[in-house]
Length: 182
Image (tube, rainbow, N blue to C red; front, side, top):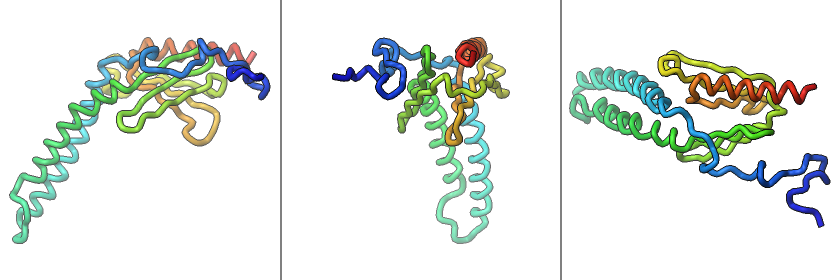
């Protein structure tokens, strides 16, 4: 009888149930907590742009004799709903974003409403980038961008890492990739 952990029949390496077990939130790493502030800043910036657009629309409608809402209601609703999303969604995103670097793979679990489990086999990685935008640089954070072989969804982004942690992960994965190539 073939063991459920024996993949050698199909040409794949055997599965080690202790190392390659399915991930739970308990054994995964969290992102840096400062990412919540960055996500709030970015969401707030988009909220500001959206509120200005709705304010302009409201001003244009104000001069229409057939207006249906009092002046300021539309941009006010956008701001109130936007503030709820700006304060609430980044916290939930942080809570449900986890990762782990295993000996043969990178495991990512993310998603507030739609949970996504991503497993990136290290042998499929083409190259790695560590990136920082303006906000991340201010908080000493970065993101690890993993470019894999394939055409569909070939870039995997791990955001909200301390820059030192992002560089450490990049270097560990690079070591695995270069050791495997030899």
